Image 1 (cartoon, protein in one colour):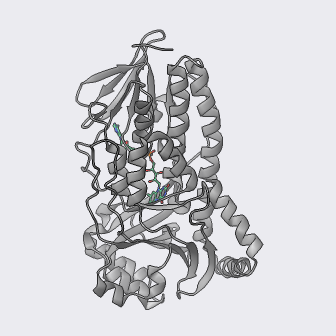
Image 2: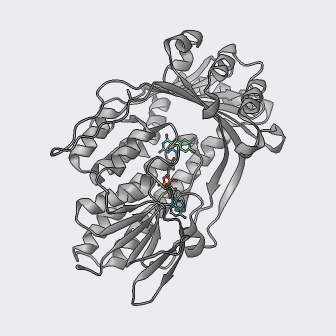
Image 3: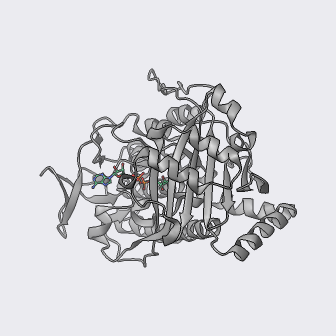
Length: 426
Ligand SMILES: Cc1cc2nc3c(=O)[nH]c(=O)nc-3n(C[C@H](O)[C@H](O)[C@H](O)COP(=O)(O)OP(=O)(O)OC[C@H]3O[C@@H](n4cnc5c(N)ncnc54)[C@H](O)[C@@H]3O)c2cc1C
């Protein structure tokens, strides 16, 4: 299908939606993105994000080469390993992550920088302050999107990239379910000044780690070291300058079960109450954890109710489809949701470009994307849920056996290598 009738409307300008728009724009496919936020910086975009080799190659495929180089140069030092620790800060397991193996680099990116790269050059394509409400589809006519402020837009493909609470999915696949895992997390960020670094144990400032604690509790830790080149490389005369930020340590303390007492929403406790709650929840742990929580910026404290999605059966392919969290939202315990959204964006972009060039019919382009995505997307959902459950073992015996298994695995390098291959597959 070539010509003026081909226009892709993307609802949601997050990781997946922007990456898709970049890929389509690069190939000259008409695309518009509608984002409910009022400005590019309306919302704190979270902290760091681990970009896996597959996520990186999807991003590279969609971004113009100069922009990719700028983003790559802006990434923090890639972690050399991922660790599992006890709440007494003893190491249970360390899995090395490859550095610069061909096609295999892991990146530790600042979310703000990733977003800045994804937003670059989308003037006239990305429309802010457009909260999508619903769509109407005429069998042989355009698809019309309606927005909360009464405005409308038309196109002949509609992509829901509007995240876990997707309104596009609610209308398109009303039976698709997003469910609560019962896991609650309190997150915070510690700015790493020299003074703060001197107060914290070195084990906290190393590579990312998951802390296993008794009573169904866990803590995720990740350091983001900002430094090195500022990523001011771009094609042509343009220059992408990332606002420099400070290095930081982010943590997320979590628990499973109704009796954990953890809040479900941010409004339930003030920032100081949240901090006091987190300190109580870590009593009996290595004192370094309390020092870290005490040093956290109160404004950074947040509450996350961890959700997952239920696998969806294939549906009859049409001109409406979904990418990223809008279809396969997953727990953050494998740190892959964003990478899978990038993979969706690259694959859908590739297929829509082929349809735009009349190389394949549009329904086939979308069906091919959907059948691959439903397979790898829900595999990622299942493995993220398993990781969340393993991190929050509730029974005392199961917890001790789990620690024993991690120690045994640490002593058997071939088994560790297998885990690494699995991580790289995502
Ligand atoms: C604590 C935490 C840590 C994580 N760490 C990692 C990690 O290290 N690596 C990783 O790969 N993943 C990670 N993830 C997961 C990752 O953040 C998500 O999977 C990813 O953001 C999904 O991208 P998306 O584009 O599908 O959705 P989003 O990034 O959520 O974007 C959706 C966009 O749609 C917009 N929108 C919503 N509704 C509307 C509407 N009605 N109209 C218009 N616009 C709308 C939103 O404002 C938003 O901009 C983490 C998640 C959490 C919670």
